[in-house]
Image (cartoon, rainbow, N blue to C red):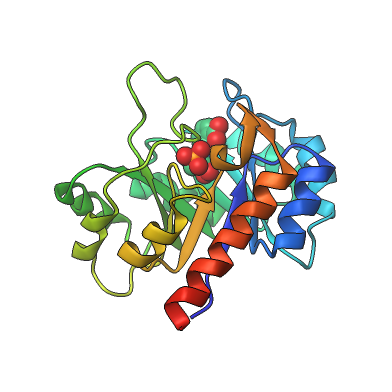
Length: 219
Ligand SMILES: O=C(O)c1ccccc1NCC(=O)[C@H](O)[C@H](O)COP(=O)(O)O
């Protein structure tokens, strides 16, 4: 089974080049002003050009209004939108209809009961991104480098398409793939040398770890 890999929070040509060289299927850009990964839509538009035809460009927003979404779509031309706030199923449907783009809905999980929150979005969101809950004191809904108990995904209805996210890195990706067997994975701070600073060497190391884990499973 193919594994989609999203490298999120890209800000530089060097990090983009490393993500594409490793085989990223998705590249993500953050439009949340408090994030150290924030990019202006026009700059994200410039960077995403380098990925055209190689990886899908994802615009990550948090409870964004129509005006900001319109600007992002016009200046960046994303292939997908990731809604990473407290958007309702109705808002997800509205955003999809307004922009005609597939939507990834991010949901934070910490216990099996949280899986119930997925149900109202089924048939509305095109894909889910399951992340950890934000730690106390963090202003960021994502990009916190925190994992959740991947074993709760065993209770997920078959056929729910999702990206496993939250605190992944080269050291734990083997366990994550073994325990959850996700169709897609997403990583941000695990390939950074400091908040918001992607490290091409860490990106390369992550892809190597993914390949090694998959080779082990195939053997
Ligand atoms: O990364 C951010 O700064 C961010 C800020 C606001 C909303 C979402 C954000 N990130 C979204 C992502 O898809 C991250 O890749 C995801 O949360 C995992 O991050 P990490 O735990 O650092 O790998």
